Structure formats: C-alpha cells, structure tokens
Length: 209
Image (tube, rainbow, N blue to C red; front, side, top):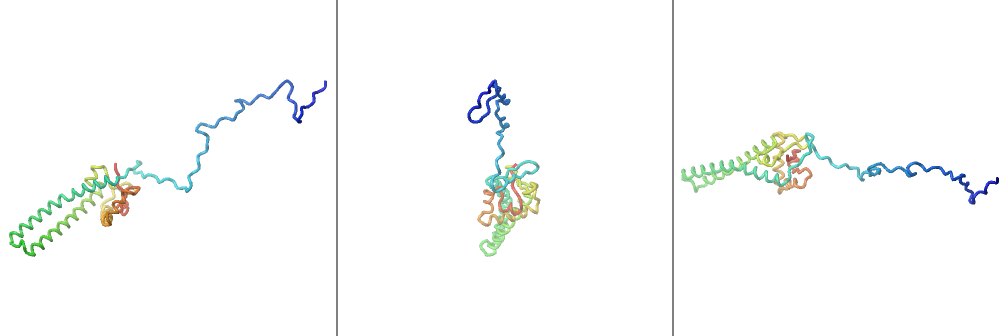
C-alpha cells in the first residue's frame, strides 16, 4: 500500500488515528501566584533614611507634654509660689510702715530708703522661693501643678528623674529661654519632642502619663 504524500509546507503528518498527546494536567496553564499577590516587595525609597524611632522608656512608648498644658501648669505653679511671697511682703511692708510712723520719719529720706530696702528684700525672697520650689520638685519629677495634669520632668535618654543638680541647670536654662522674648520657651510648641531650650540644655523632656 502506497503511503500518502507529505502535506505541503514540510511539516510531518499527524499521527495515524488522531492519536494526539494528552494535554498537561490542570488545563496546561501555569499555576497561579501564591496568595498575597505574589509580587516582590517594592524597593526602599531613595535616600536610605529609616524613620526615627519613638523613644520608649520601660518598654512603653511615651507621649510628650504639649505646649499649652505645660503653660497652664507653669501659670498655676507661679500662683503657688507667689502666695507665700505675697504674704511675707505684706507683713514686711506693714511692719516698715508702722515703724516709720512710730519714729515720725514717714516723709524723710530714711523712710524711702527703708521702703526700697524692703522691696529689694521681698524680690530676693521671691527669687529664692522660686528657685527652691522648681529645683526641688523638678528634681523629684513633678511640681504640684504638674501632678494635676499628669506631667513629669524626665531624663531625655532614660526617662528617669533628673535629680537636683540637673534641675538647677534646667532652671538656669529656663531663665535664659525667657529673657530672649520667651523664644526659648515657645520653641517647645514646634519641637518634635516638645523640648524648650531649657530642656535641651539640661537634656530633659516633659512626659504626659
């Protein structure tokens, strides 16, 4: 029996009887990508800088005290400090006036000198009371007003109380921050860690718990 001629185009003839090879299992399509999209992770952003970590003290992330709540706390602390100074100044002023009237020198230059001296003494006492109050309570962590708002002064690295020496340094920084039109204090409103200049000088932060 003579074999049929090859088909045009030079391709081999199909196998006899239509014996085509079976299709691959699963319909012959490639397997779907794994769940999650199967796409590689995107490349890192240019620059190579990782986001700054949020400090954590004792395994807990912290929240810094805001500018306005700290302002209210300092205002209340100022009232607390001024009360004993006002009482003492009133007593000294009254005693000076009584002594001047008793001596009959109420209109003399001596009375004016005495009044000026009492005023300077009251200012000095007020400064001593203010320094003592803030250094003592900052060193322990909280002033009386800061307790009302759950604020505390802490070491910027460890979150621990700063002690009296650092508290004294912070008070000096507070004074320097205030004499330049309060710019050093307002700085805390824009700083990422709510630090004023006095905080940066003493390496402290104010935390809200």
